[in-house]
Image (cartoon, rainbow, N blue to C red):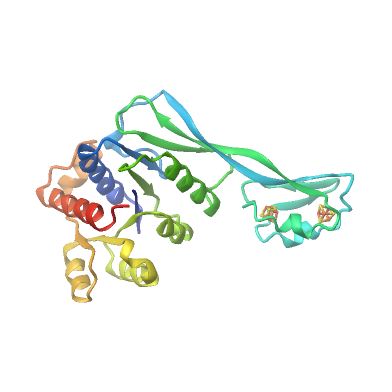
Length: 274
Ligand code: SF4
Ligand code: SF4
């Protein structure tokens, strides 16, 4: 089972929620894991780790030029919607971080001057020093997360996860363009928002897949969503004690918050078990 959380704003709210949920689920299961697309890790997991082991390499197919066959016609440059190829006085430069291996340039070349070549563009590591199964992503300089990376990450998790394991992914609020992909690939997605308007928009815009969505929202918003007929809406308290516990790297002690976590856990385990 892969559980993702998306915060609709910056801040620590979504990470606090997911890390406390992670500890709750971890206590019940033998197999679990955490992957942060944000950095650094939540304070709750801030045991220092210097011992990281590479468990997955991002290998991207990137075009390579055969200079003997190339006639410098620029067809490959023109067809690349990602602007990943730029002409140089004596050839071409490929920006691997912009290339998503779509193959359009290779198909466009009438001279068979382009071939794909596998390149290492980053890796996923696991920490050996904590008992949280922490994973982190290390991409090459300039390499930025794209839909291709999201697909690679999920295929790694699927291959890695054992039966009955639960994997938690913390998604930064800025990765809007990949939410659709994350929704498609996760077992369930928690949308954490204190803004009913944004939550409502997200919920409706993803209606075909809304059964996978759980809204984590404030008490007022919960009433509004329930009136509107939405099913999985969890009220999450927000106060200074919760923020303080979180920043201090402690499990949140607020009773209301913990009750919400238990509700959330029950929904995830009972409604979206695979
Ligand atoms: S399309 Fe082929 S021949 Fe034309 S510039 Fe690109 S690699 Fe060279
Ligand atoms: S494979 Fe696609 S994205 Fe990559 S350089 Fe070629 S056309 Fe551009």
